[in-house]
Amino acid sequence: MNLRGVNHQLVKIQNRNLILKLIYERGSISRQEISRIIGLTPATVTNITGELLEEGFIVELPSFEERSGSGRKAIPLAINPTSGYVIGVDVGPRIIRIATSDLLGHLSNIDSFCYDPQDGEKLPDILIERLKVLKDDRNIIGIGIGIPGLVDSTSGELKVSPNLGWRNLKLADPIEDALELPVAVENNVKAMALGEKWFGKGKKSNNFVLVYVSLGIGAGIIMDGKIYRGANNGAGEIGHTVVSEGGEVCNCGKRGCLETFASARAIVKRFKGTPGDEDTDINEIKIAVEKGDEKAREIVERAGHYLGVGISNLVNMFDPEMIILSGRVIRLGKVLLEPMRRSLESRLFSTDRIRIEISEFGKEIGLYGASALALQRFFYEKEEL
Ligand SMILES: [Zn+2]
Image 1 (cartoon, rainbow, N blue to C red):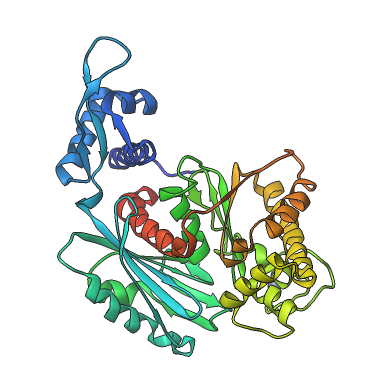
Image 2: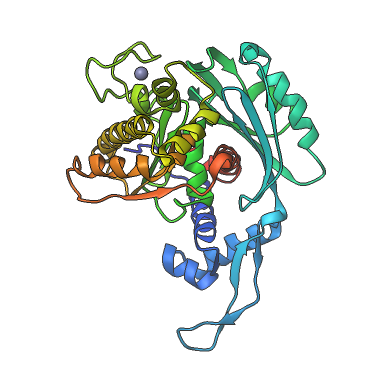
């Protein structure tokens, strides 16, 4: 329950945010429709959209006749994509990807480079050097960084990243100081879910879960339109939910976690007998399945089965409208997805079917996520006041 009083300024910010969100969601919309949908007076809508027009973040499109009748012209308002840019940073276990995005998530200047994860402490400096190059004469309004592990998004600090072996790494402060831009830091999968909400399949949904199946497995939960973080920023760690008691030891130290069945690491290890290059080898396994390799098929079907078990727990817990899937393991296609769907749907409680979508962002999903983070920070952070 929100026990804080609501002052005039906050009401104004909230109304502005509602209007911006609606323009984002609809693509284009007239003041009249905004007023009708949100229930604000036409004067308030004119006032707030006037401010947004003046700031350049929205534009008026050529008008059309209002269908409902009087012949009055309705002028559609839309986001002005090139009125501002953000920089998204996707920190992976070996590769960092960086790109610039306009206000509608059109990526440009995509760059990627390898780094040595041993150099955790040097990460802020490595990023500052790269980011300075991208800070050109365009109107850059912020930076978003997605990184694996537990992130305190308020302080912009990475608390712990088991996959990278890093702890207590301050990221936002040094980068903000060096570049004089607001920096938002978030767990990479939570950021990806936000990316789907801003630009992808989750655009029109306020309750969905993004499940990212890659080296590890994580979920980003969007609840009532916002990232659900939990008490310790650990919500969504589906990879470490136990799907088979007494199973293999996971790298978190427990047994039978979903990651020991369905992560790229686990699948490759089971197929090759040794850890391999997960990215290349997932493709190799896919080809093996297509050529009729029974062992490969069995491993992938088993991974799909357990993935379905893990996701059914999420669905029964959060009742989302849909699940969006992403990550290299998902590229295995229907040999993974069919057993996944069967085991998932046979375990659902309140519904028989759940909508499952595959993200359209491919390898760039982390960049869309990081860009959405920066936009969220720039446009809506004041809502949290
Ligand atoms: Zn685990």
